[in-house]
Image (cartoon, rainbow, N blue to C red; front, top):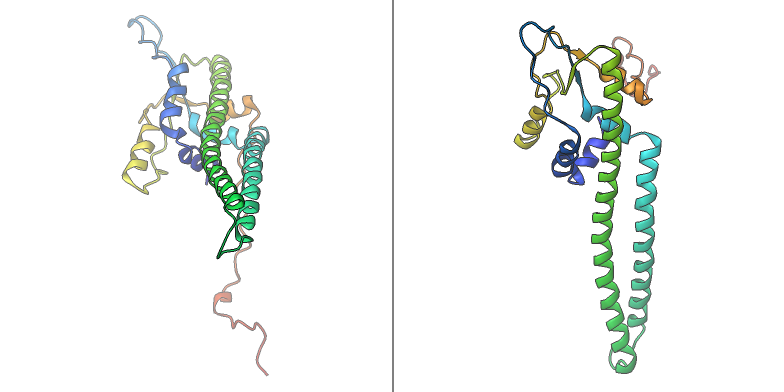
Length: 231
């Protein structure tokens, strides 16, 4: 449903990076005052949902795509050199290759393959770092927008939480554990869900629901594949 979720998980950001980013911004909520003070108003925001939606917007998606294409172009250039070297090796006399020609070509082939493997590792690490930078930047913007929306609504403290417990992804135990951690606030009858307001403050387009096709006519499922009547 959310394309960026899989991206973050695959990149290893849903755990270590996300926890690091949260640690930079989230502070412990203030303890409620004395009994004589007015009860603090609470709000909740689905921060991870907003992160997913923000990272799916055109500026972030295009920047990630451009970054990946730059690394892929380097890999393609190396791959072309490797293929060229292989063709030169294959052109040598298989029964009696000239060592003065074959040895340098083979060493070149080994060197290019080694560099290709190193570049693949560099690509993965740099794309992870690039995605982490986007994640940190997006969280900073969400954090600032929460302050504006909370102030406008007179909300004293805001928790990052998903209030629903009906849409838990139950693929495996690790995923269920992560889904549970996304819902630290299990119940707060007075909490305002500020997610939509924060989305609007950030200018993130609301997710569009995929339109379903028209419902089939009654009995259409039983109609013959050819459609028309037989003659």
